[in-house]
Length: 277
Image (cartoon, rainbow, N blue to C red; front, side):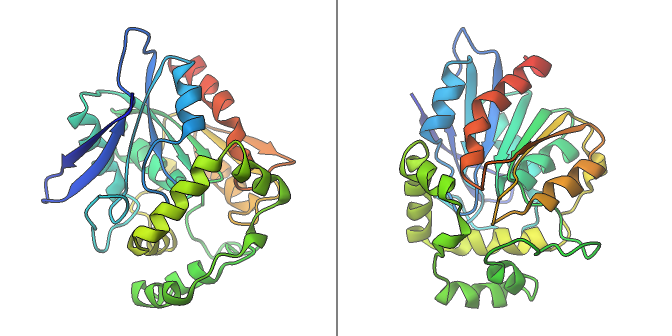
C-alpha cells in the first residue's frame, strides 16, 4: 500500500513524498525520479515491477509539482538535498535511484552530490547537460520549450501560456504504450498539467542551465537506457553522457521511443539488484 507524506525541508519548503513501504522481503530501496511533467505519484507498472522483486519504492514531487512547494531558481543539483531529506524522513539510509526523462538528471544529481547515500542509478530517456559541443536540440521534434528556456524563466513561462501538446513527438509504439501499459503515466501527466506548469517551467530552465555538478563526479554504477527513435530526448544525449560518466553502461533500444523504452524498467531493476541487492 502506497502512503503519502509531506516532508519538511530545512528552508521551510514541503515535499510531497510517496512510499510503498518496507517489508521482510525488501532487498533494495529505489527512489523514482519522475518525468516532466508528472506529480511524483508512483506509477502502476513501476510499482508492480518493484513489488515482484522485493524492492521498496519511494518518490517525491519535485518543487512546483504535485503538492511540493516551489523553489524559485532551483538547479538540478538542488534535488540531491531534497532526495536525501525525503530518504531521512522515511528512514532510508542508502538507496538506488531511477529517473525517467526529466527525472534522469535529478537521479544523477544525488549520486554525484550524495555518494554515501546513492548506490547506483538508472536513467531512462534522460536528458543530457546542455552543451554547445554538439547540436543539443538536434533530433527533438518540438524543441520550442527548451529553446525558450535558454532565454530565461520569463521566456519559458510565456511560452507555456500558449504551449500545446503535439502528438507527433511520440512514435506509434509510444502511443500504444500510453494507451495500454503506461496509461497511468499519461493520466498522471495530464493531472500535473491541470495543476499548473510552474514545475515544468522550472525543470526546463534547470536542464539548459549549468546543473551544479559534473557527470564525472558520479562514481556509482549508472545504466543509461535510450530509445533509438526518441523524438523528445534524442539518442545523442545518452551517447554523450556515456562518454563522461566514469562507470556507465548504455542499453540502446533500437525499436523504442520516449515512452515505450520504459518497458525496460523490470530489466533495469534486475540490473540494479545484480550489482547492489
